[in-house]
Image (cartoon, rainbow, N blue to C red; front, side):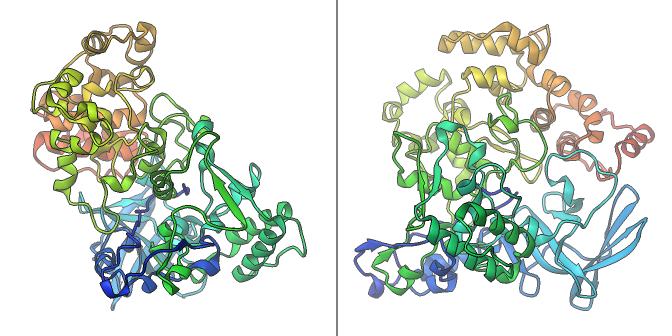
Length: 585
């Protein structure tokens, strides 16, 4: 679970090669798959797995990081500008090269674009000073496909308004692990060392799971592992401590990774096959030796909590969650009333689905790949079908008692064929902030009747569909249908003394920023013009990401563009709204 925003899972079906002449009966599993020498690179997979390899080459996962020289780029470098505070960045071309020119009070700097990151919902960019001297840096402008517009890169996550733009972030220190392929062992230093290890790129985040879900990473051979770490430090260009213990060598390895790790040290640019399958050089050399999602090593052991078995589904899910975690900003809150630092609750934004799924009830037997194709972009229609009664076929594989229609109707209390009889409609509600200013499903599979969910966050999940209902009426229905009881004092703490208030309206006025974003999106989906006055103030929200949700919702309701520069300051936005009111009349 790396501390990075984006990443897509690659789970190539090794053992099902497309060329029958290469099929060899499997006899064993690779002995080691986490050290640098264990990795072969994706091209080694193409011969046997030609069909899936060809599909994967065009997938969002493979294209997560691309060299600009060979990338197809949608963002227009046509002189467009973007301003934050007194800083302005201009996107421009010079010959065949793309540049971003940043003008601040300290002067003007110009960066030649070298890499593009992402490509499904937006494109981020990496560049180097036009002199070619220095390090590659994360550029300050992001192009969002849903709005065909530029946005400040810093506003991709839940941060407050910034006074200006920055290019201080070094690509090698910010974006490498989840968007590219590195040996898994280089991302286990925190788990091996524990608290107090120096910061470095690539760390996993098992520590943000509750103890009951936390797996243990330990050394199997301190001397050999310390020796390997010293070799890794040398490979990066650092100076390892001579003959030091493992305890002394781990901080040196973390520091070397933070100071020296760069593109030339990757197994490969972008997310390769082995970013998910782990090192498979032995498999490439002898197909009868299978790759493994599990950690296989004489130096490192990773084991589940006591009393649990490491199922194949769990290993796949942990592979996904290496990147799909996203609890890396200083935004303090999670879903279900939790605070990030206390390891409680799920993520509020997209790309946290992997960790959220690990927190839920199905992660030991069901894998992410049950619903998602890791080798291609999931067709929108296929994902939408999963949210209908037809999608229940996935759930009844285990929950066989619900395979009968009559049982589903009694369980859901909803009409035959309605959205309320869809399993994931209620157990995976759309209450997370997506990358395109639309809501996406919360992947912590659980019940909307859970006390933690009813009294821990806003809005009540039933209100996502029943947006016209009051808190009192929704809670009364939950209590009547499922025999639950919820403390009125806890509900009043969320919604105010009068529980007769509309649940969505109360969330808009009293909610935390991520809760407000959900309520805003729900208002937009229902296209209620009477909601316009309550949405307009959120165009100047303290968290700029929420502003974009308000703009999207208003445009749905008004059926016309809301032409406001949301990268501007809240003061400037309010001034424009005073000059050009949005009333919805």
